[in-house]
Image (cartoon, rainbow, N blue to C red; front, side):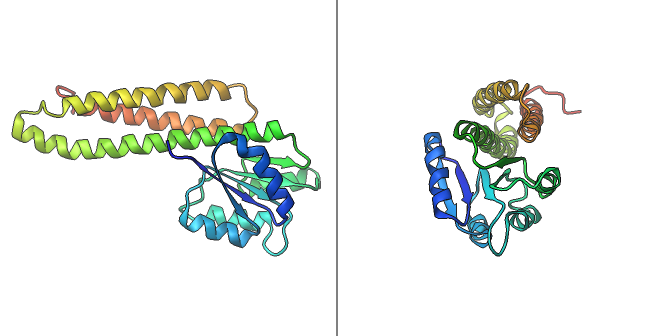
Length: 218
């Protein structure tokens, strides 16, 4: 499976180096950005599983950068974890969540905790990628199956439907395990994303069953 990309945004090279050291164990692709402007440029061409965004940066700070990210159709659903060296109290934290952050971590942070949080969003990203692949295959099957069914009596699609069902079952099993893992977690952003993924899977399963020969299409 293709590695997920994680965007690290901080104006201080030593902080980026520290983040890379912490997250290297996840074996994903880590992309650096030394400013909000660099981050926005990277987001124009690449898809990211999660963004780690420093709040205090010269020029465009983390809040402003997040606002730009959330305004773009392409990037608005990417999870953002804010990192900050200064704790200005509840109002500062609220501003981070209001800007679209799924989490807000004060430096110095526990490396294990940060790695675990990022890992959750990498897993969710992987499941969503699998789901998109299944959806694309279903759309193709819907078109091809109708054509083949007209020509050959409707049974030619069954082998591919069985394969799609098996692949979908694998994704469903992994998504269920991830949802259980997040069940007692305080990470509401991650739990909500997992619930959204499960709803998509339910819809995809219903669409797949509707394609089977003999299904009630009324």
